[in-house]
Length: 211
Ligand SMILES: N[C@@H](CCC(=O)N[C@@H](CS)C(=O)NCC(=O)O)C(=O)O
Image (cartoon, rainbow, N blue to C red):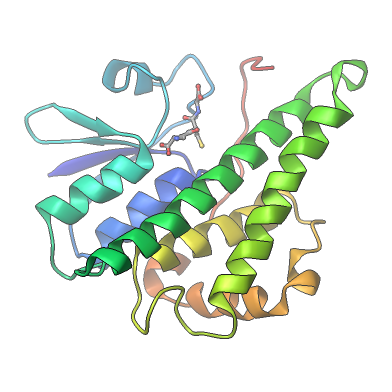
């Protein structure tokens, strides 16, 4: 059976958890705090980041987008990526936007963790622009449709749904719901799927000094 190193707030890990569950692939969930020295993540990923998918033979797959692609290739059914080239590229585009938004939020989170006099408002503003730009683009492309790409659930929804809920957890005061009511409707609908309700992000306590 697969094992997945995951963290409860991680949007990157949540994408993989949802994908595995949607495909009905059993796995053992290993919950860790990747920022603490107690994590076993470095044993499986030289970049020391989770999620990490550990195979039965002990080999590991890391980097969430690569894990998603790996799982899709190894377990094609039910398909979560379209078969046509334009569809594949369109879904990948969603994944890229979402990962960029998540990266910007992680950077802002640790900037906020610094002593107030060490924080850089310019750096934070730069990251916030990336988050805002991503939201604007998701809102534009998804519009009032049920699914992000085409008329079926796909990796584009797993990615988009994951980043929207992550904003609620990491940054509850962010006004994205008021600014993009279409995305709020889209997110609330997705969050009703069993694979989403089973993986609602929860903040963790980080004990080590990170920033
Ligand atoms: N691009 C990576 C990002 C993963 C990532 O940043 N994971 C965080 C947890 S949410 C982590 O493990 N950080 C530890 C570190 O960067 O040292 C992916 O998509 O897997």
